[in-house]
Length: 325
Image (cartoon, rainbow, N blue to C red):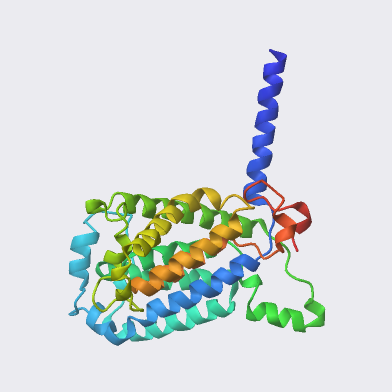
């Protein structure tokens, strides 16, 4: 019995060490800083697209009045659910709030304002999404969780105006310290993006008429009039190329959730993912979604040289020599 007790004691200790190392090892903000720039630009674009039709969409007599949105998405008595700052704005404040949202999102992209700017950008951007649930799609869903998780870490510590000024000031030449909050934000992003890949892969396998099983998935996705950014009609005479393309996408969506956790395979999987999402975006016109998925998947990117971590078989665990660099 003493051996059994010792075994479970050691198992508990090792699991606790691994859990703390996975979630709370302090890391620098370089990966989060790069994701902040990408997400900030996408958020600026997403909010800016509402500008030409702002009153037409959100005014009290517009296409999406609160009575319609409330009846479809906010049942009476429901406490939790989609809520928006725009729900409580009079028509006269729609345009000022729109410009304020663009300004805040721009400051966040530049890394000005720290966590307060991250929270403000997330709240304002999600307010536009929640106010117009009838016209949002997968792109807005992906961008939303990226913005929320960026509020956890110290993404403004890297690739920001503050970081540039810090390097130029002799008194503040030291880089900001590594933080466990950066690690927590990255782990949340990684787990969420893995779940998204699995859901997309399952959706392809369960698609009607087995379009992705037969290899016709990309042809059907790229065949919508006026949507593709590049002309792929020439592939009509090459069904095997289309089938290989379709199967490569499905295989990536199913394999990435496993292989992304392996440090040796990660560079290849990230490159594979970049090719997949860029090709999908160009062929289908879903470029915002493709860029959002690339930004989310970048949470697995580590800026250290390949040789510093490739030898480690532990997923998500940074070697002690690389912590804080």
